[in-house]
Length: 86
Image (cartoon, rainbow, N blue to C red; front, side, top):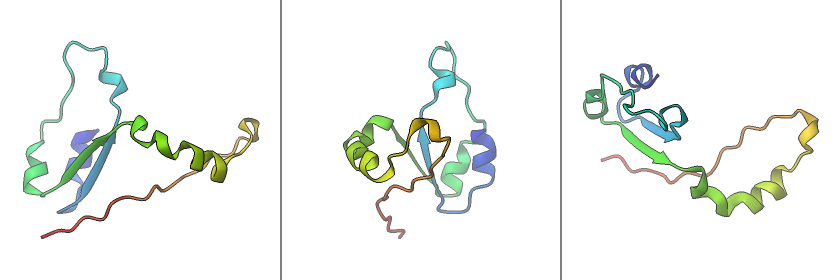
């Protein structure tokens, strides 16, 4: 999937990567063959862990609490740092 993402990124695009569960227990991990696109498209790739945002859990629960049986799904946009492109 990363290959498809890299092939479709705009110049100076940003990619956030969280988790790679399908790769955790493998002896050899799969990789993209077009990683050079990161350099040629001047992409920013940043990994993060769910635990990086544990400090926001109380705010999430306060603002987005809903009963687990309500079958509602939420999309939440967390604040991100602004990047300056030179």
